[in-house]
Figure 1: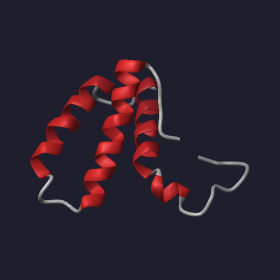
Figure 2: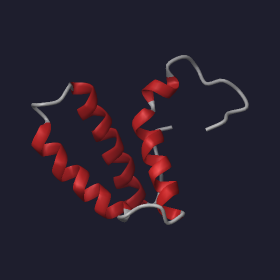
Figure 3: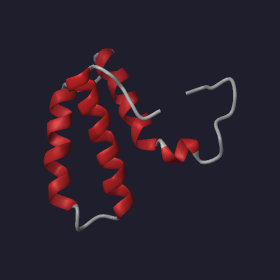
Length: 82
């Protein structure tokens, strides 16, 4: 959140989904969320199928990035994508 050196141009914008998911995971471990990572993952997978034709492609791509990150966290115990 407060890097000592600047990120390359466009990095933050390109990694928004992963950063948001990581912030949510931090909130989960601090007890500030209403669901578990597995419950969030399941709800995101379900929701993706309902709106894929009604939202801009970027929103779907960001959601899929977050799903992949949560899947790796829940089932493989690792975070990837940075």
